[in-house]
Length: 102
Image 1 (cartoon, rainbow, N blue to C red):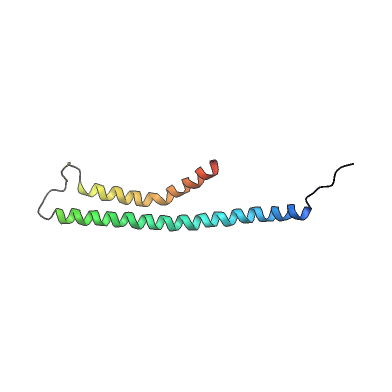
Image 2 (cartoon, rainbow, N blue to C red; image 1 turned 120 degrees about the horizontal axis):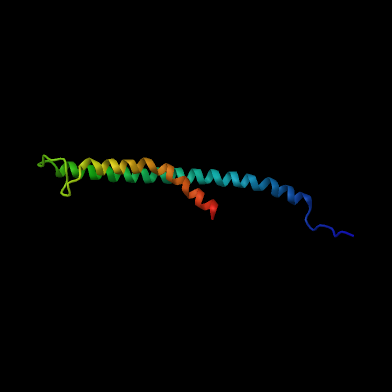
């Protein structure tokens, strides 16, 4: 004679409904938190770029050349930082990949 199951079917139905709903809510929470984080990091990087640009502009008032002491163009630093600022939103999705693989 088969033994009676200790779990009722109502519990299994509830788990089947709660699982996907909680996964959806957690994914939306991740998207919301990561969007806030990206905006804050972009703002901090843009502030750093603008501050560095202002320092370069103020320091080059008496200098006619467009290179710094290492011989690199002054605009390359700002362009690299602004490129990094635009790449941050694409990089945040790699965190989700690593979290899923683990």
